[in-house]
Image (tube, rainbow, N blue to C red; front, side, top):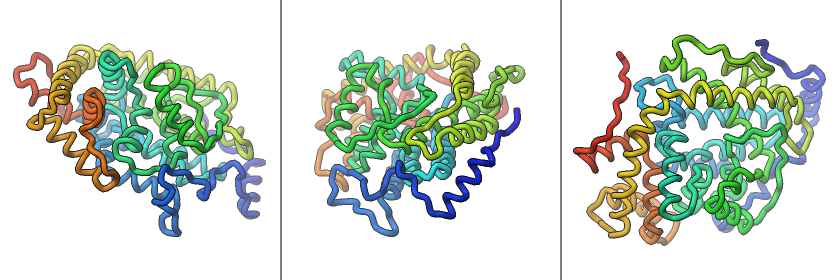
Length: 399
C-alpha cells in the first residue's frame, strides 16, 4: 500500500497561509476558555489556558496508572505491547499532527488526548463492560469510561479543568466512527452536566454525544486511527496468530504506519479551511471495515476472551460485593478505606473542602475498581480472597 501525500495544491495553500499568518476562524481561542471557577487558573504567558489543563491532568497521581492498564491484551509479560500510557500519547501525536495542519488549538487537543482514558478500568473494554453490568445491577446506572474520565477529573478531584477539555473527553467515544465530524458549539456547564447525567441513565445518550469543538472532533477520530493498526501489531507480538492475517486491502492500508499516514492525509485534504472534519467515503468505508476485522480476528478471539470470562469477570463480581459491604458499613479498617477513600481525601483537600466518603457506596466502589491497574486488581483479589477459586496466570517472557 503506498503512503499518500497531500496534493501539491493543498501543500502550496498551507505554506502560503502560514507565510501570511492565516488564523483558522474555527480554531478555539484561549480567551474563550470556560471553567467552573473563573477566578482561578487564569492564563498567563508561561501557562496558557489549555497548557494548565494538560499539566493538571499529567500531575494527577492517577495519570501514573495508565502505564499498567490494558489497552487490549492483558496477562502478558511483554514490554512491547501497548498500555494506555502509550495509547494516549499516540492519540495526542496523531491529533496534534492533524490539528497543526488545520490551524487548530494544539494545547486543547493535547489536553483532551491526555485525559480521555483517565477513567478507564483495568483490563480494557472487557473490564469496562463487567463493571457497568455490576454498577447497573445495583444502581440502574451505566458505567462508561469516557463519562467516568469526566467524573475523575471534574467531580472527584475537582481540578477546575476547562469545559472545552471536559467536553472533548466526554464526547471522545472512539468506538463510533463517522465520515464527517461537525461540532455543535455550546458554552454552558448546565448543558454539559445534562449530557453527563443522561449518559448514566440511557445507553443511547453516550452514543449520541457530539463534540463542541473542532479540536475535540480531531481527537475523537485520532483515537480510532491510533488503535486500529497498533492493536494488529500487538496481536502479532503476543503470538495470537500463527501467521499474520490477510487483512482486506483497502484505501487506508492494513498496517499501523500506513493507516496513520493515509488517514491524516485524507482528513486534512477534505477538511482544510472547513468548519468540520471529513474523509472520503471509501476511506470511511475502509476505516469501518478495518474495525470490523479487528473485532472478528482480535477482540473476539476465544483466547483473548477466555481469561476474562472464566476468571477476571467472576473476580470482579466477588470484589465488588465485599467492597460494597465495606463501603456501606464505613469499615475504616478495610482496604477500601485505607487504599482508596483516604487516598482520595488526601488529594482533594488541596482542591475542595469535601469528604469523599459522603459519596454513595456504589459510586465509591465503582471509583475504586475503575482506578485500579491490572496488577493491583489481581493482587487485591488475592488479598481479599486468599483461598479464592479464581486466579490469573501471566504468560511469562520465556514461555
